[in-house]
Image 1 (cartoon, rainbow, N blue to C red):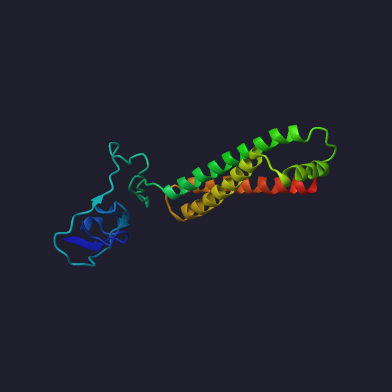
Image 2: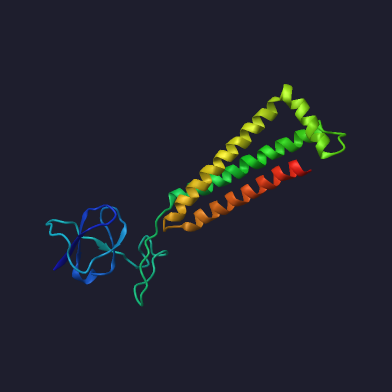
Length: 195
């Protein structure tokens, strides 16, 4: 006799053989790994059968699939695209931040030659850029603002990616990059005001 139930992921009716009661099976519709119940919860005819997760060497997910036995559960490899996007946004934020700072440092050396103290340098810059800022300065500010926007997107996507069970390492890496970015940003701002 077969066990019939609804997939908790896609709510489609699924049917498995009795031997798969309480074991992990792959939904034929959404391919989500679900635990088959001990007894039927629906009585629907013509339900497609779920396929047990294969563990053989020739199966597509064999490298990421654990063997059955001694309490081990089969794990189906899947993607965490939100975490990947978060990581990419964090890397893009870093790239924009580094490029913006390289531009500022290269122009600041030319503009501030001969200034004695950091306070005098800041006053000189404020006086030069308050009335007629050069194009490179406006472009660099826009680049740094885009960097901040990418950083916010990286944090949001990484936090969402942490909530998903698959490939959390991408989300953790994105969060670490965003955290170090924030730390460097705060240290840079503090150095400007203290120095």
